[in-house]
Image (cartoon, rainbow, N blue to C red):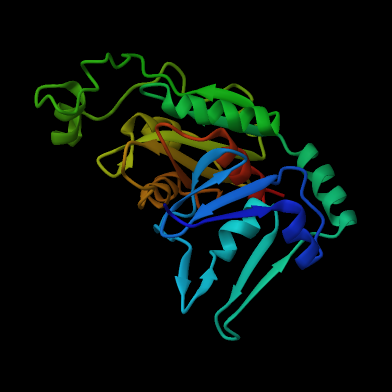
Length: 264
């Protein structure tokens, strides 16, 4: 049986002298050599690199960043000083940040082939009280169209023939697109890149002055260069680093990611 480490929120906060973030976890359970931790009873990957807790010379070594960020704290790494700094925002700054965020108009725009991306998009929208916009092809994809194991399926045909990938949309954006300050862009990963259904949405909208945050879902593939590829195609906007979620995503992980973003 694997050794188990239960890190209670109150214990850690007493050690580092920090106040809990309202969105922080109540408990974290980690197992030695296991890249998955339990956050409030839900499985969450420690990170995207397969990091695990380990025992070295009889001492337990834990992934500090995963713990701190799960508790709603800021983690900074100084390469020159080789130092990790864990901090919390002063209460007055938290209040100011909340007020600033409340003034932001946020849109979650997404294409979801099989409802996985839709699920993540809805969690983001609910957490931020944001509007949603569904990127919808005029010719919807059927289940057989999406069967990448079938050499004759629509997605395979489009993948193998890039000239056929122009997917016309029902509409390229909501009427009030210019009013939004922050745009989340969601999509499934197709062959290591964002689904080409997004192409017209990205190319036909002006993201100047907007913060843009990509997110994706996939069975196994990572975010890869998909966010940077979309940024290049858009040619405008302040694009932040995105996040990949599995098809069987954990809502707690989505909320924690959303609340860790600097979208002011």
